[in-house]
Length: 249
Image (cartoon, rainbow, N blue to C red; front, side):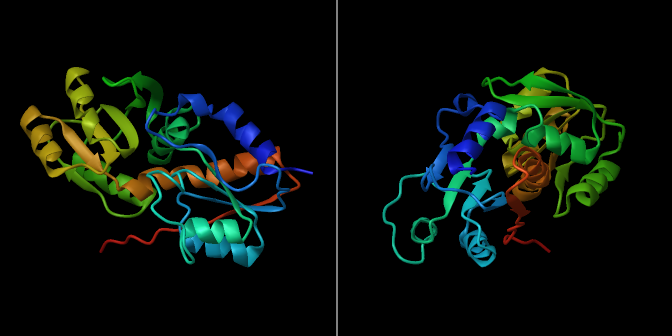
């Protein structure tokens, strides 16, 4: 019998909870650790669509990257995600910044998806662990097209006009690491949620910045995490759910 706690223990060994940022909320966030798990869903976000999907297939566990509870809850009423989870006896384990920084974690999977070389850990100015890598596509226009075809979605970028060889990479929101790109002598930053002023600062400083989209820069972890769980718990049926609902044209 495999319980929620068994799966939490496995994930915690691979991606220690105490390596998450202080502001984060990770681990078992909804449910009962002693529940027996028969089927589970792996997805980026626990929204109402993933909850409904779990209900449809009879899953009683959802494993997510983004925490299902992050900020303080004002209420838990019928129709809300947490209410529906509790009502349906569905537990949620969330692995967030501890999964971002880990070996084989989100940022490394992003580098892998793009096809970057010589990927290494890089300690940013704030102590967060991102990745440095080498890029074999030196042209910004060509690299933007490659990122788009590799990840899907849309790519925004500011082209410095300089060849791109050494890059810093951070899945999700990483505009703050432009400072590290400049100070470390890198040619480009690949991340997401880049603010307009960061693009302008990058142009002024002569570096290139790519915004691959928050969802697409992080959803790269879902299939590998699902495979990892399948390998560890062969008696449980793990399913991937891609719950992208924010679209662009």
